[in-house]
Length: 128
Image (cartoon, rainbow, N blue to C red; front, side):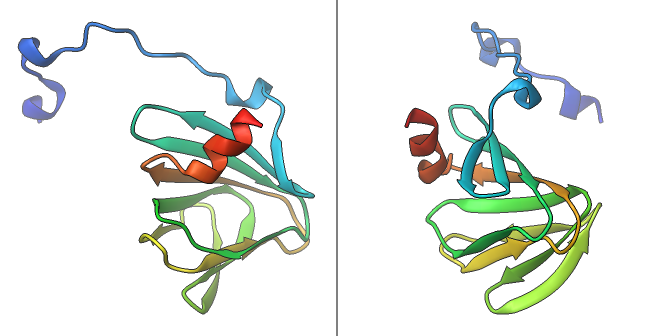
């Protein structure tokens, strides 16, 4: 375990990180009821996503690899034609360009999406 928390002093960064309070930001609303709160690093993007009841993120695909984890509530998640209801503690690994989408049914949900590299469509929406 000590190897995990240790590090070679010669590789230690000389720059500081950034503190972000994502929940204080205004959401990017891609479709009504679907709020995006992205946090972007040099090589990864984490997107906190809020679903209002009966909201759909349409089926789509993109070059970036994605991992989706449900923090609160439940969503129906479609991955490459298969649909499952997932809730707190569930995660989905989505390879590059695999069709996927999600929808909430009757309740709200909070989901965390991780993209590597940063999802260009979200970065572009942040700049708009």
